[in-house]
Amino acid sequence: MTVSRVLVTGAGGPAGVAVIRSLLKRDDLEVFAADMDGWASALYLVPAERRRIIPAGLAPEFVDAIIALVAEDAIDVIVSTVDAELPGLADRRAELGAELAAPSAEALHTTLDKWLLMQAVEGKARIPHTELLTQEGAEYDWVFPVIVKPRSGAGSRGVHLVHTRAELEAAAGDTSQIIQENLPGDEFSVDVILGADGHVISAVPRLRARVDSGVAVAGRTVHRAELEDTAAACAIAAGLVGVANVQLRYATDGTPALLEINPRFSGSMPLTVAAGVDMPSLAVDLALGRELPHTVPFQEIAVTRFLEDIFLPVDEIIASS
Ligand SMILES: Nc1ncnc2c1ncn2[C@@H]1O[C@H](COP(=O)(O)OP(=O)(O)O)[C@@H](O)[C@H]1O
Ligand SMILES: [Mg+2]
Image (cartoon, rainbow, N blue to C red):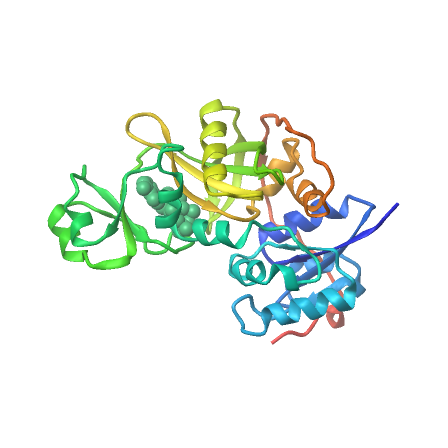
């Protein structure tokens, strides 16, 4: 059996924990866990000699530090679960010395900008009508209220409703923001995985039943063709390969429309794995160039979560700045 070495970054976040737990089930992988913080919980799910402290994703030395780590630990595959790390890694993919389980630099560029994303998907799946926050954009024939939000944002920061045209025109002139049709219906999050040729292997929609500090703490998977098909069409239009999370919300016309795509593993990945689609494992096989099943089915299943404790000798905690 060939054993491959996989480096997973973001060991302190829910996505990193989920990926590490999934990959630890395989006896043909050696999992290295990395984070910028020595207190990151999933560092301590792997043996002590496979824990690594790395710079922050936006630090100028980040990619060089990963290249050095890959060489030293003979890493075969890098799985980054941190948004901030992805563009830098994808830009220097050829220099990394290991396969990067992430979309192309171009697809990352598109998905990390909600304006570019809507333009890429327009005509291929239902999108909410979207304009830049310019005077011209404000003059469109909007049905109020509308949503105004940053092109590049996260964690709902800066997302707000605008109720009148006067208010919209007063805010106009900021092309770092978009104006968008308000989607008032139910919201679904769809984990997708696409093969090397860009076809969708699986799209698993879930309803977030309870959310605590932005993290879904209860939910369920849902079989519904219009959600699976819309998410798949959006992911294909964005040029993605591998794993991504497509967020949809129902419009007033009763159809699901695209909110955004996060080009990485979601924090709710354990539910998708439990539903029958082990996306972290499939993503590593994809990066290793192995053949994947053409499609993988999923079942409806519910989850409710709690925090779990890892107790350690005090001197085992790795010092980090
Ligand atoms: N067009 C919209 N209509 C209704 N709600 C929206 C719209 N855009 C964003 N929201 C709400 O704001 C949240 C965050 O927006 P999103 O586009 O996912 O950006 P991010 O998560 O990157 O901050 C969404 O989950 C949704 O609840
Ligand atoms: Mg979002």
